[in-house]
Length: 300
Image 1 (cartoon, rainbow, N blue to C red):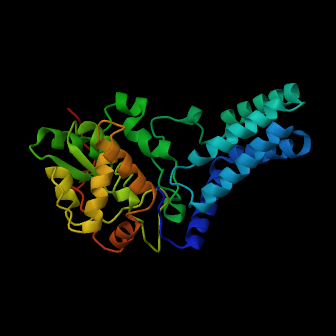
Image 2 (cartoon, rainbow, N blue to C red; image 1 turned 30 degrees about the vertical axis):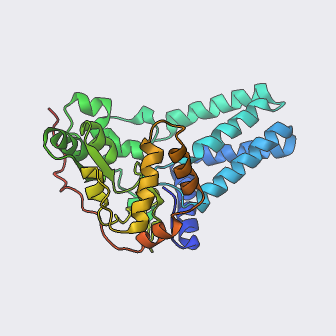
Image 3 (spheres, helix red, strand yellow; image 1 turned 180 degrees about the horizontal axis):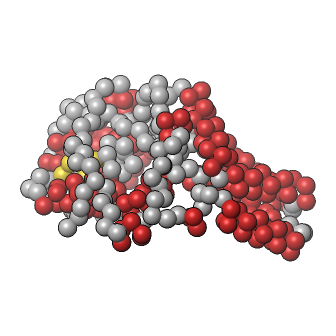
């Protein structure tokens, strides 16, 4: 989800939108983080102030990388740090009571909390998606994976059915844009994740764009890489990428773990030996093709 060759201004704007989404959709998180930092500054000991500094740096880093597509996810760490700061403060007993009262009122009154979820939760999850690219992921998944919808026979995500279809087929594998559901149901077939969340070579190819949706970045696929993964023989056209794949394959699949050649491959990747090849591959515009999306489906 990193390794981005995009303008810094674009990332900062996206990161700021991530904080704005949290403030408008779940204000208790940022309010609690700021409150915890304030407690540390005013009355905290050295340990609490260290937590506060960590929380500030963490939030700054989240903004710097452009935030994320999942509302609130990257703010959990600073929130826990803030809670620890308050718990350690000299006003611990009073603070705990106030936090309990505030959290209880928040749970009961805030309309987007899980306690208010029902059959129709998530029907409007796309609201605001076009503005920031950040959404309530629970609302996205709930209509097809939540307990109540599943008990009513809700259709599954298309990736689930495509994965089952691949598992039954004679094909060795496939590209995938929904690698979680797709890969789970694809059994032991090869799944090439075009977003590079689970692909050690594509993740090293920088993502270039003038517009982004934070968190998911489709990487260009080197010529011959798909055939290499599906056939098991290295036929990657670019010699630099071909050499990089040899090292990556040793690092991720090589045995024994402490073999000298595997250690050499780790050193090569860590030292940036293949950086030029990855940079070159990032400038090749080849849009990955995914299987057609059949829409919601029923699993056997």
